[in-house]
Length: 121
Image 1 (cartoon, helix red, strand yellow):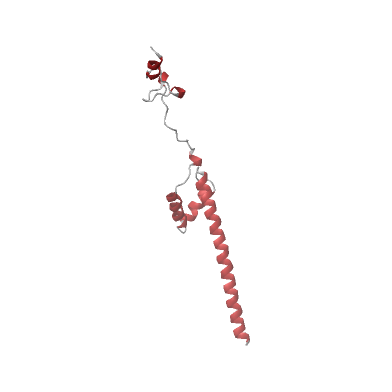
Image 2: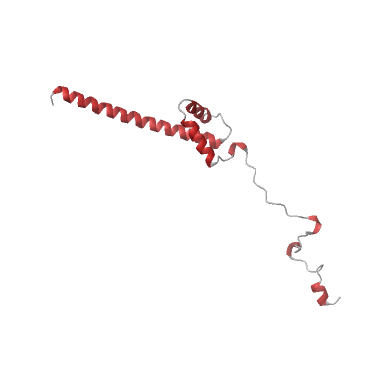
């Protein structure tokens, strides 16, 4: 074989890293599809609809409060759901404190108005 035939012979025209243009890999090697990482159940993220559903569940007056407390104290293996229940509970406590402060201030102002009316001022 002369030099021209050796360069144009498909058996001798190896690509870098042994890649062959027809998809055949030497030694039976075939690249595999990329693998998705396996996330343990306790770290699996919650979808947007999951958060929406849990908010609706926690908003149910008595049952939702009980379920929220159970999830917040460890009634689920999923850490994301546990933290979401804890944050929802914190927001409920903050709102409850604000409502109590507003009720006390409103009641106190009404009491002072009533006292001023009867005292003659």
